[in-house]
Image 1 (cartoon, rainbow, N blue to C red):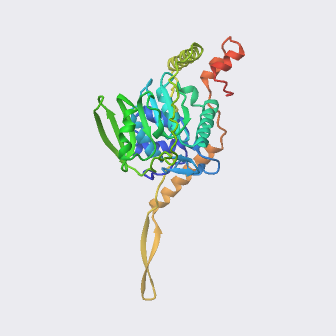
Image 2: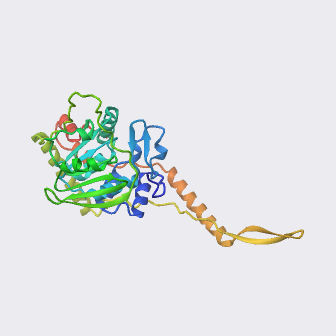
Image 3: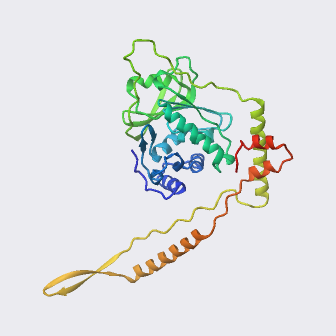
Length: 358
């Protein structure tokens, strides 16, 4: 599934294309997509396909097409502080983007059938926290993943404000999914080849809207060959943050706000300048005709306009090449710089930076 938008050269290019095609429509969703490089969730050797609007699968590891994820993010109508459950959380790519919107006081849970994929997701999340420049620009709700079949969730599990299911749901499992949702909550899942948004308006009332025609692999059914009682899957607890963690959140928030106010006072823009796109021009041909013996043969001839366009494009290419040769300065992490300048013990500075090395 996918192919709705043209391929990008990098993550920003992909997001530009999704915006142009109206799959990304809100600034909050756009910021989350730009902050998480889709290529980081691909295995080595497959990253060349990361910025195409296509699904990708290797063994148990799977990523849906970018146009699907963007429609899901928009349909969920995420807000800071909400609780989110990802049924079939896979690589954790979607859950990590959701965590950037939920913020530190949200709940971000995922359940995944394959244990190797859960380990992969945890590795990718740890890499994001330790290495991504985006981590210090957001307040993050860290995802918690468990292994299990989402059709075997314990009946006494808590309900969620937002739920997404990343596999095809049969009609007889629709009500099972709805029960996991709080009143006023939103559930997004594929039913009968339609990505569907379901709003729970009351204890027994719902509103549904089809979003997009899709094709998803169906949910894996629990193994019913064994007559013994099946173990139910327990979701992660909704734990309250301890005082030490709360202190770190508020110290980082205060410093981030101070930096933003300082930059605004100096007239320094907080957003990076728009990415300069390479001009793409198609050459036009003018056909002329010449006589060869008794036959009239068409001969393509470049027009003067074509020659001018070719010269302009060559100048642009030369400029792009010269700019690419200039060494890029690494982006400054102002929050880290501010923390490291504080008169605090090194161990406390390390804690405030989440033990990041850059």
